[in-house]
Image (tube, rainbow, N blue to C red):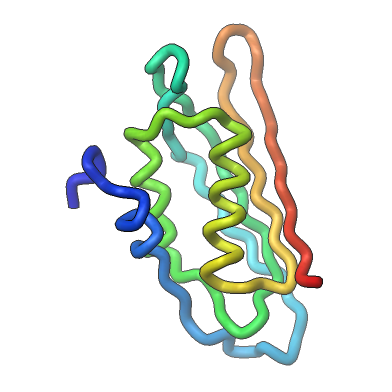
Length: 124
């Protein structure tokens, strides 16, 4: 797949889930992607981050290969840190409807600053 020309709809279609093997139990699932990349919309320079997804599944869990491909689609997108983290949270919550989810982006130093952005969802 050519990720430089992927549409938003194609990116969302990459996400997959599978049935939670123990939906009656609260247990934490943590996925860490230390090689996340996107593009700064102001400078066009690459941004690098470690993205952490910490969640308590309800009926479904996120499939990792699909998540990796979804993340690859950000490599050509010009988007601010805050937009990335909130968009990832919104997309993953829509896909798997977790009881709880936190997405954290720990962005590498650029211009003398490192940044950490965290967004959370709790099922109402």
